[in-house]
Image 1 (cartoon, one colour):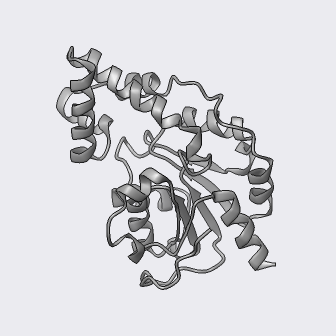
Image 2 (cartoon, helix red, strand yellow; image 1 turned 180 degrees about the vertical axis):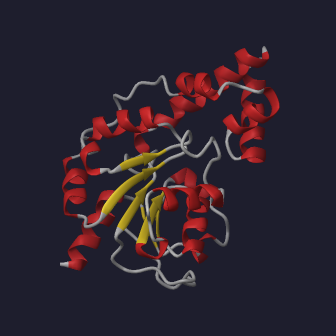
Amino acid sequence: MTDHTSAPMPRPPAVETPDVWLFDLDNTLYPSRCDLFAQTDRKIGEFISRLLDVHYDEAKRLQKDYWRQYGTSLRGLQTLHKVDPVAYLDYVHDIDYAPVPVSPALDQALTELPGRKLVFTNGTVKHAERVMEKLGVAHHFEAIYDIVAADYVPKPEMVVYRDLTTRYGVDPTRAAMLDDIAVNLRPASQLGMRTVWIRTPESVQRAQPDALQWIHHQTDDLVDWLQEWLAARR
């Protein structure tokens, strides 16, 4: 595990012991080696291919274009093709959750972790519930703020961070956010949250050159980081 402590701090300063923890779901609560997104990614390509009646390779090109331009493939499909988001999300999350292992270590770390805990995801409540059920940690979380609650506006749009904090009475300066996508942590830092980047090979490649300006801690393993944070607090 590697902690970053020399990057500029956000304003206002975030507390070391948060009252609220915001956890991303995919590649954060479960290890990226589960590779669930590979299944979802293929389903997105299939959905676009069928919707637009184009070859799968062309659908994948469009998928990446939509993601770059609109933040998510869904937002691009809604904007350009008036796609029903419910049908889309049901289709792309119809995947095999078997690769997600039960995690007694994560369960124990969350048991010891002080404060409220929420899931903040660009996925759906149904998808999050399936993942957390497999992990064995659903009982730790007060709520799931998903893409539907965000009116299909994805992270890292600031408006959804403000909506979440208002909806659940979260003081950002007394909160921490953990996410595998570095840019998703920038609005959290700007609001005053403590930030933890869960590094994956893909997220490291995608990270902005200046990302460490808004990241307080970084790690390759969520459970390791939580265990070390708890040990340091004792």
